[in-house]
Length: 421
Image (cartoon, rainbow, N blue to C red; front, top):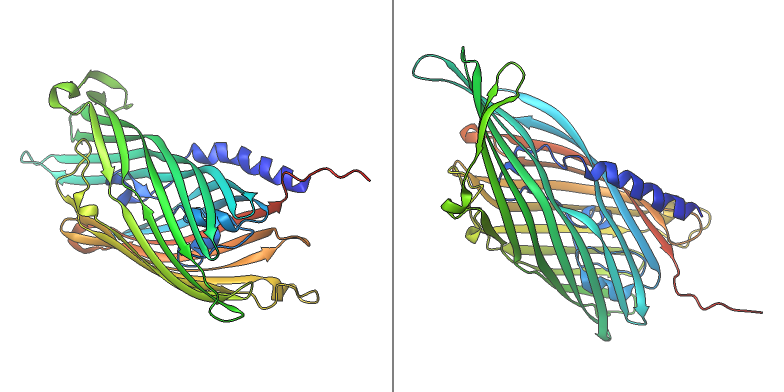
């Protein structure tokens, strides 16, 4: 009963959190927004590793992992991130709270499992101001703002056709709206100009996974993984409105919709390139695990014809992640601390984004705890991520962040045959 109330509560909270901006990062102005980490809190706290799979946890980044499920698993996570944004002259602080995912996974046969859920794919949320002086010695103020993002619903299937070999596939449907606004005002002029661009985006992609987990010794297992996140094919229905507005109250004075069809921009295609991941790990079941992964993406081929910017370019992206966990004694009765799962990891990400010819890279350190709930396999996961992205060179912004994750992984049994004594 308590479990059902928790799930209902999370769903109700999700309606409020999904309605808010998922980020306040200035880097969300590029591409289709700031890509969100689509792993569970357990994955995130191990540096984002996806290759590890067990019988009681959902793994959003590895569909082959569903073949391991022995119990129904409900999974959800809420995160809170504190940002410090700094350029060459000053710094500011901001924060944002998000629902990161809602997911359910359950076994459908001895060596097969299925999962489905909802999570954000990308987020846009920024407000930037720049001031300059024109040739008439008047102050010119430009305000750039954006909001929205893409959400994702998914369906996954995992199957183990041979001992220690698991395969899996996920189909994702992505949808959402991105809105970007630029407003300019000039000193001593009563009216300003405004340009609002909106993209309504939909599209599909797929994830495939192959895992090989042989026993090396009686206790120890080798974990190997290959994952392919296929090219994300998106269709964007675009609109643009240019108008003048009152400096006094911001209301529109006069405006017109741009004929994007004449420019060939009313409908555009966005193709986010394929990501390939390979991973290798080693560990003892229900005791410890350590592993590493390398991901590669040919992002240099990406472009956004409607929302592109002149000072932005893309190059191939890559990520290196390492992490693991340790459980002192999961069967301990006398010590609760011994049953806690201790996780840690780190990752270095070359995002592939170039702004003013400067690479935007991201480095993060993660750690957290899996706290057992009651006498079953359910647990509360608390995790932290400390990281830095960007640079203050070339007039850019460096972003330091501290992220707190609070997630639930609840277990139950479905499809139990009724027994009559």
